[in-house]
Amino acid sequence: MRIKKLLAATATAVAALWLAAAPVAHADQLDDIMKAKKIRIAVAMGIPLFAFVDKEVKATGSDVETARLIAKDMGVELELVEITNAARVPTIQTRKADLLIATLAITPERKKVVDFTIPYATLDIIVAGTEGNAIKGYDDLNGKKIGLTRATVNDSMVTKGAKGAEVVRFEDDATLITAAVSGQLDVVSTQTAVLAAMNEKRPQSPLKVKFVQQELNLGIALPQGEDRLKEWVNTWIKTNFQNGKMNAIFATFHDRDLPQDLLTRQ
Image 1 (tube, rainbow, N blue to C red):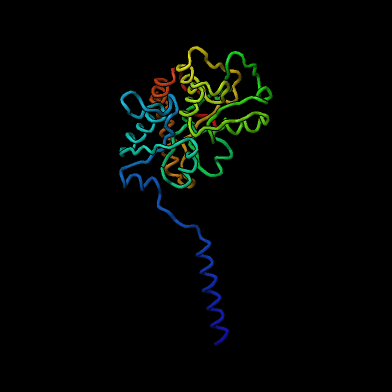
Image 2: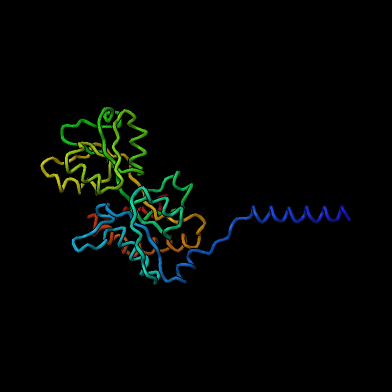
C-alpha cells in the first residue's frame, strides 16, 4: 500500500512539473485583431519624412501612411501608438502594439527578441559635418563631439567604431535636430531624411555627408511566435510592392523610389 501511495505521489509530482515546464499558450494575435476589429501599430514620431506631425497637427509620413493602408486593407480600425526611438523594441516585446513600423533596421541582435517581416523600405545612415570638418571615416571622429539618437544602429556603429569620440545621445530625432539647428553640434550621425530637416533650418551652415555608414533594410516588427500575423503582413508587403502602392507612399515623402530588389533582401 505504501509503495502504491509513493508511486501515485511521484506520478502527480511529475505531472505537475510537466505542466509547469509547458509553454504558456496565448491567443493568436491575428485572430485577436480581427475579433477586436482594431490593430495597434506603433510609430516613432518626430522622424522627418517617416513619421511626423504636419501643419494641420495630423500624424503623417511614409511609416504612418503605410500603417493606415495596412489597417484599411485588413478592414479594421487603426490605433496609432506613438513612441520614441528607444521604446521601439520594448513596445513589441511587451506587446503594447501588434506591429511596429518605425524605421527599425533588421539586425541579428534584434531578431533574437522580436520577429521581422521582409523589408518594407530602406534608408542610409550617414555621418555629416560642417564644411571645415575633415572626416572620411570613424578614426577621424576621435576627439570630436558627435550627436546621434539613442538606441539606433547609428549609436551602435559610432560607439564601436569611434571609441575616442565624445558621443552625445538624444532621445529622438526631433531633439537631435534642435541641437544641430541651435549650433550645439557640428557633427552628427543620422539618416539622410533627418539631415535634410536639419539643413532646412540652418541654411547658412549646412551639414554635408562625410561618409555613408550603412544602407539599412527596414522591417515591420512584431512579437515572436505570431506566425500567422507575420505571414499576413509579408503577403501584404509583396502585394502592395508589386501593385505600386507602397512605392507611391514612399516616393511621396522621400522623393525617390524603393529599391527594385527590396523583396529579395533580408
